[in-house]
Image (cartoon, rainbow, N blue to C red; front, top):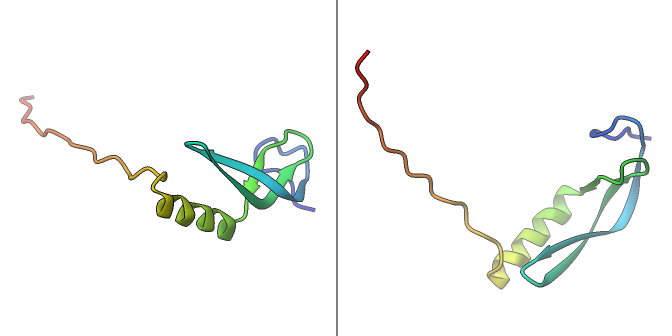
Length: 75
């Protein structure tokens, strides 16, 4: 059994009901859940599938563009 990465007290149990909700759309994924703290860890392949589906639906947010202004400092 794998130990939980968050609480380090519980063990990870395989589940098929991890819910991800984005703008009214609900995605149900497979993964692992800690039996102590209830933290959820979806499988990477499941997460990738949910992200691809959300992108096709137009609900996956695009990364924010960060604008930085550089200025000279005098020290």
